[in-house]
Image (cartoon, rainbow, N blue to C red):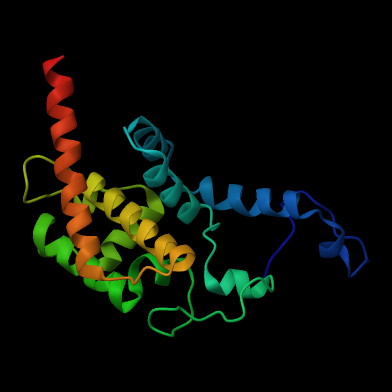
Amino acid sequence: MLQPPSGWHQPHNRHLLRTISTRTFRTACIEAHIFSIARSNWNFFWSLSLNLVHRNVIYRFLTHTIPTKRLLHYFEIAESPLCPICGNEENAVHLLFLCSSKASIWKAIIFEFLWPTVSIGDIIQACSSLDFENIKYVSKSYTTAHMVVLVTLGNIWRAQVRMIFHSTPFIWIDVVQQIKNELLQLHAQTEIHKQL
């Protein structure tokens, strides 16, 4: 159950939650979750050289502000809380990780880039805490596990947005290829910067 921020006194008014502004309530909820992440993990995250999409997706995931069908349906913006791909209820974890098409992407990326013992659950945990230590091993020398995860999230998000706004089919194999291409492109950019 949602609670008012700590330090607030609840008078005998049963309608207290209705008198709290949405901004105040949202800030309290976000801060409660964000402060559970270690400062060193935040420092690591902010030090990464990420584009806006990569940073935005993980930050929205951490702050529970991804506009999922379930959330949009709750606010009566979407007609249904169901995932347009698989028909299950769509929350942030489902949208980014557990939908059948997204799970196929993650399995392919784990097989291609990460240690074979890494699971989707391990990746969700790493994203939830910004602690990539348990998934740090990669099979390609030109990238890192955290970049693989963040680039994958960004490409899943882009494909989802294209599907929703442009009616582009969500084809998971194409998304995997886009992820591979972007990781190679990032490697090439890094090599160019080293030469400067």
